Image (cartoon, rainbow, N blue to C red):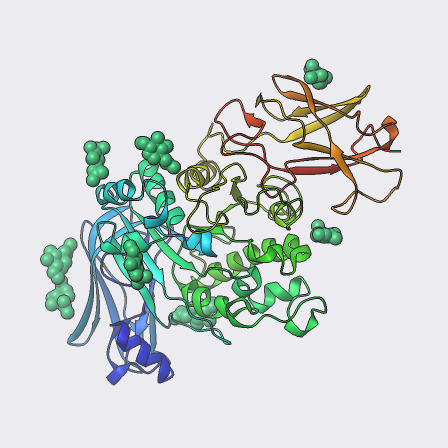
Length: 502
Ligand SMILES: *[C@@H]1O[C@H](CO)[C@@H](O)[C@H](O)[C@H]1NC(C)=O
Ligand SMILES: *[C@@H]1O[C@H](CO)[C@@H](O)[C@H](O)[C@H]1NC(C)=O
Ligand SMILES: *[C@@H]1O[C@H](CO)[C@@H](O)[C@H](O)[C@H]1NC(C)=O
Ligand SMILES: *[C@@H]1O[C@H](CO)[C@@H](O)[C@H](O)[C@H]1NC(C)=O
Ligand SMILES: *[C@@H]1O[C@H](CO)[C@@H](O)[C@H](O)[C@H]1NC(C)=O
Ligand SMILES: *[C@@H]1O[C@H](CO)[C@@H](O)[C@H](O)[C@H]1NC(C)=O
Ligand SMILES: *[C@@H]1O[C@H](CO)[C@@H](O)[C@H](O)[C@H]1NC(C)=O
Ligand SMILES: *[C@@H]1O[C@H](CO)[C@@H](O)[C@H](O)[C@H]1NC(C)=O
């Protein structure tokens, strides 16, 4: 079937001998989006012919015939409750094509660069996790092949892993964050989960963004950029959007998770506070439109805040990207980034990763933290604690600052994780300013007191920041966690807080 579609694309959408076929990413063992959304299916056929879809299984459904136009037919099913198995049969006169063992559940797209692509066989406890996966017969995987293109494709050029059950050999090479997230969501929801991996290591957010999104941030033209060489290859503007995202727009989705940003630490880093939120907005718009309104226009979008790379580095751009991942707010969801959720991971470094320190092997904690966010934000589960502590109020006291958090905290002492900027200038402190340590001197149930003695007199304390280093602490040993749930405090930087404003 895939060979047929591939030929179809080369022959500008005339299927091989005009035959009936599904698009590349519909296959046996797949998961289609369950009710209340309606699954969209499409494929190829001879011009003008009438195609009907039959659904057989726990509930039966027969769609009204649709006409093949420009070589394509497209059907939107009536809503189907979670479950299965179903067979989906496309019928054109006497010819049929079937999808068997299809389930209805929630479909999640998993995107990003190498830490999302990071395979199951590379993580800690890999063999245990892979054999345990055989228990999850209702979680199904699919992987798009890595392709870059200059123009928007309507179907995937190639499928790397067709829809498969987790028992398949392919799982070892599947995204660990994606799989573990899907498995955890299954444990929670107890109905089928479909996972669509579309990732490429070392790639920029620009590559995954449409020209609409890039334009919004003044990035639409590669030649625009004075300070950088224009990117070629898979980081060039829109090339992966074109070939690995755009083709998927017509499938109904529940949401997306994303792990990317390392590449942008040295590629248009100062634009990331625009380019990343703009990509999310644009994906939402495009998937909503592509599915004929079935995928929610504000579908939930989860992401991993960057982990660590270079121990001892003071500024390799990671702190900046972590901040920009939140649109410079420090936490999500926020006003700019609605219905998003974030797994903080700066406390999960891996000094000894054989795949390089930029590829930490603990993906279980990353996926667990994403799952909490999905439960709270995507599924509106009440009382799911999914965010680490964030400062609400910062008061200046004599020779100290008292930081009050939005929740109770669990604190261990540290001399240098908090830093202050001493400045007479009215301009906000930035990475180039002089920062000195602000040792933790005391703490309460929801507050931390730090010393400002390295910066005297008091009036000169112009900003405070937390964990503003590539590698701020050892494994699960940052100084501030939530008392409830062991979630790390995300990094923050605050300039001239109330009470310290001149
Ligand atoms: C789906 O088709 C297979 C064979 O193609 C058949 O064995 C199975 O019973 C069918 N299942 C349903 C739910 O129709
Ligand atoms: C598809 O399914 C229908 C109904 O279950 C069956 O009659 C037909 O033979 C199947 N076709 C193929 C190609 O498997
Ligand atoms: C499947 O789950 C059962 C029950 O939790 C467990 O005992 C078993 O070891 C699991 N199987 C695999 C292959 O991990
Ligand atoms: C899949 O992973 C195995 C290691 O488990 C590796 O040897 C193989 O080359 C990979 N296959 C592909 C297609 O990437
Ligand atoms: C984004 O960050 C840059 C610095 O990195 C800053 O100059 C700019 O004002 C920020 N833009 C927004 C929209 O926050
Ligand atoms: C898929 O969605 C895109 C974007 O909305 C649209 O241009 C294209 O025609 C759609 N394809 C099908 C087969 O519906
Ligand atoms: C690996 O398995 C051990 C033993 O069950 C467990 O203590 C450890 O937390 C696991 N590691 C990860 C990253 O899940
Ligand atoms: C910080 O301020 C809060 C609110 O005023 C107070 O309850 C707490 O005791 C103070 N904490 C420290 C460590 O000074």
